Length: 234
Image (tube, rainbow, N blue to C red; front, top):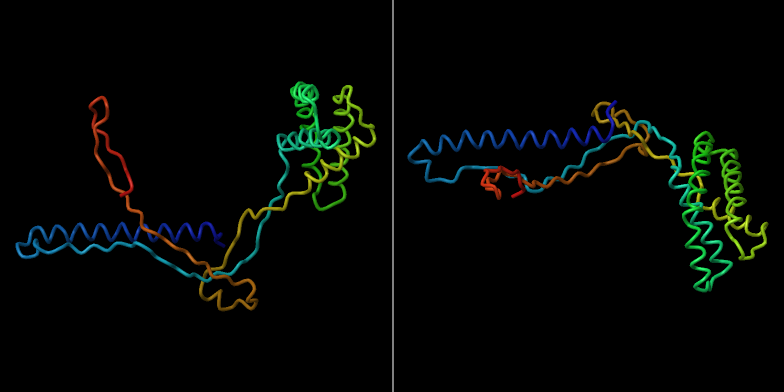
């Protein structure tokens, strides 16, 4: 069974090979033209594929999906964003000294959040995103960070339980399970097999537009006087 990406790649490869064969044939014809005293005054035939549109029917066979997990850096960012959002919500009009204080604790807070995000990432990777176990692990990790980060408030008063609830809620909102991604998409392309498809919902038409951006070798001289050949688009 061929995957969709391999099938489309093969189509592009075949179109490219067709262009190569066309150019080789053009060279042979050009040689005949230059050697013939009558033909040499005519333009050499040369086919250029400027825009090619293909509509190809395929049927989706089965899909293979993979679960996306949060990286440690992503969890760390969620932690830190949650802390500063909550503190800003409680102190929306921060004076300069308060802003300076929160700026000053960023390095230490980042160190703590990084340590906890490593453990959280490992635990979440073991949890099935489709079960309550995942939500439970997120809550445990969020609560642990909330308890740790509360000490960073210093002299700025927020009731601990209120602070913890706000932090946990914010983290839970931003660590929802990621949707699975399709790893492979096998397709049916054989005409005989397509005729036997009974479910029209599995049939799709792929529209492919191919534009010919020709490339050619150009010769130039660099600053040191060396001859340099570069492949550029026309």
